Image (cartoon, rainbow, N blue to C red):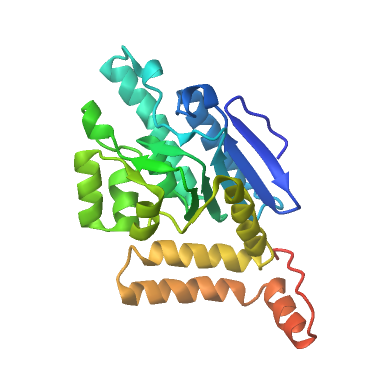
Length: 264
């Protein structure tokens, strides 16, 4: 990535992996308007022009927090109109992140509260540190989750558990997040990012068109009836049949060699 941002760090690992770090550690990596706009810019660019990126890892700077949610100091004293105008940016941000066709893996290095927890639930899957903690704290502030949390968290952990957590605003830990389905695995902090990057490397070695179609089929299919989901799956499958990568995958198998996928 050639762009530079004030609130995000981007770093390529190998040829096909992009590491994105939320970089406001002095405020526990809380969202401000600029960070939301920069995430929109980054993920829209990746959606429209992925170039060589086949997998994304998203983490937070430092060891204390992944993302503490909305920056309440920035929001202090906002008029209703200004608050709602700002929130339109957050709404756009979560939609473009969820809609990104490239697999997005979370490496959750610390606290993920409010909008930070919503960001976790918006990713394809996440690995978390042993010290990570989570909470949807919005009701304690007189609002509700508004960056997808009532929808994405419920889809990740189920309706009844999501109601319990959102209506109480209580904090839950890494092990609970893993047991309930918000996280995939728990790691020691020093092992967290290497584990996420290792999985990203495995994904990026596969045929990128097939990976993107599989991601879309899973995500959109779960929002349909079974029969509609099966029909959508076949449409996604048929997009992979005429690709060079499909021919390369079969040839590599028969020639007993690693496949070299080009995304074509």
